[in-house]
Length: 390
Image 1 (spheres, rainbow, N blue to C red):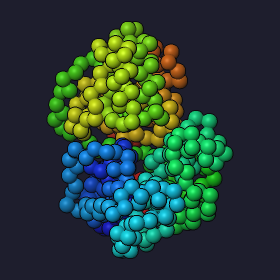
Image 2 (tube, one colour):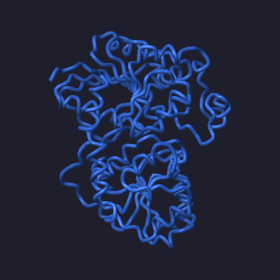
Image 3 (cartoon, helix red, strand yellow):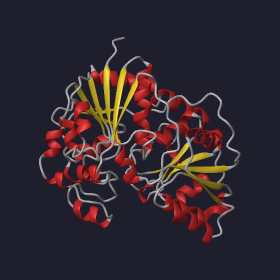
Image 4 (cartoon, one colour):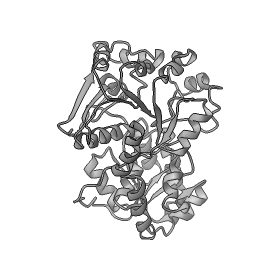
């Protein structure tokens, strides 16, 4: 097999990462490296500290063929904020130096804090993965009722986000000019891009989760549903709390919450003030080994997103260990759940309650394994990925 020289361009890279999409980049970089390819990754440490204040505490070892380039500016947060607002990679001379190297493939991911113009830099086959809904939504979350460009400025101001001036110029179209294809991890995202008048060719390639560890330890918990992810409003975690507050006695199985984010204090207070300690347990941020233990012992992973979720890595990791997912009918989540059973998708609290009462994960085990092997392994991903690169 011909070996190639790749560059992965992403605002974050583990352990300096914020969400599951960044871990997806890590997985892809290392899987390509295991195949013998030379893989370079570039990310902005200042972006991490803009989103998180604590130091990273997880270990993400890289294959010897992965070369990590971490950008850090003397101006700190000004660097990612200025790029977010203007679309220009200000205070990132190291980034521009790296982009001048010769690469066979340049794969862009989340470039929000690197500057949209970074897509114009570098030579080689260029592809871009739309992990969120960044190209058509300044927040990337695409809230329900969004009408594309009709209320973006108002939406940003209401959510206390800095407006992006570059979106009112021609930079978006120019930045996509040399992109061979946009990789959409779901049909939903492809359709959103088409509705948002993105003219670049779009290829659907579902995300993947690596094969799970062979020996997964017990979680030390039993009989529970699991929420795992960042604790932000668009993830639907507040809706899930209210749901369990109302129906926990009928469901009869507790909820475990693993993750971190801006709502952490609110969640702790909600559990305490409503005397839900017996029914909802918040355990904080969990490392990858602990997450696999939690997946393995859960009855199901619940993904209650209210924003237009794409293809979260936690869903695929859960499937990799044979655990079903229960998802809100928002974004691309239903595409994953429908590959197992359409009944795992809910539209309202009543449907969710009826689904969780007397839930038996054994009813879905065979279909979960079949879906993972067919759609969400690194093998199925690379078959499509290299077809695109050809």
